[in-house]
Image 1 (cartoon, rainbow over the protein chains, first blue to last red):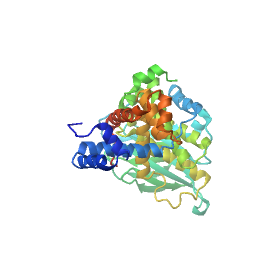
Image 2: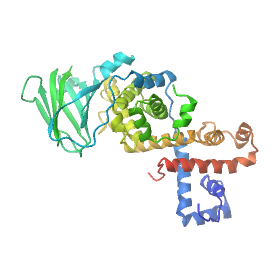
Image 3: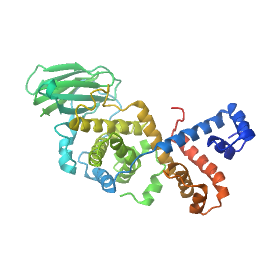
Image 4: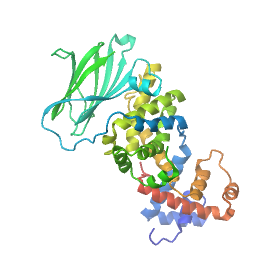
Length: 208
Length: 191
């Protein structure tokens, strides 16, 4: 606060619409030319709006404790991602999360046939949500993927190749956010993602 | 579980510092992170209309993903935004299983509307800022703004053990403290 003809308390009363007549007019005249006080009134309104609309619910203690216990039960060491990218090369991503095994480990109920897997490599993560196609869309599976990159985003070509084969069954380009959608039949595949600096391989991806 | 001592030690750590501590193996930092953002994460599936059982599932999955993504989370300027988006996607995945046609008319059902992200972030910031105030200010501001059956100044004064005439000045002092915390947290009143 700089030198103001009104007190902070008056300002808050004004923001709370508790001033009338000349008092309200005096504060209004002041804040018209004072960005600092205007910002305070604006924050008061934003804060009050936020508080009035808060309908959040805390997690039950058991739910919270179970999530906190994930840290102690983690199986993989957490490795920082290197800041410098390597030369172009083939990188094999490793599985770091599978909602199906998580379900078994934590007792979390399953979500029908869909599942979520997360792969990680030195330069990128690959997030895959795999779900069966709806009846009218035919048989097979849909793969909703996202490539999380440390390097600048690009439209990375993505290919799904049956394990042991050389030709892909489907190829698409990820969008600027790294998102892509594939459809495939049940089976085991390698997912290939052509990054700027490397060919990222997600090996032995089971679609079933 | 987090003790009161841990809370006081950790209460002013920034998100990147908390995440770095998790990467370094500090279990208390992880507990603090989950506790700090737990309400935000847990509320999203409920707001999306999922049951409390489904909300539990989403909650566990989101924190499992967060645990695996810690190195990336360290670089997030807005951790709350990342958590909201990830939670929303988990909700969407679950909802697609139970009612596949629900999201057909939504252009990008896997990403939350930006206005929801901003609103939920703000609500989280305000609640978090309140939690960092002293007891008297937290109780007063919560009574004035958070209680559904908003008590009268008289009732608040009795509850706090102060004269009714001091509620106004105390409110201003407390809001000043809250404003300082919100500014430090990057609260933007104009978005």
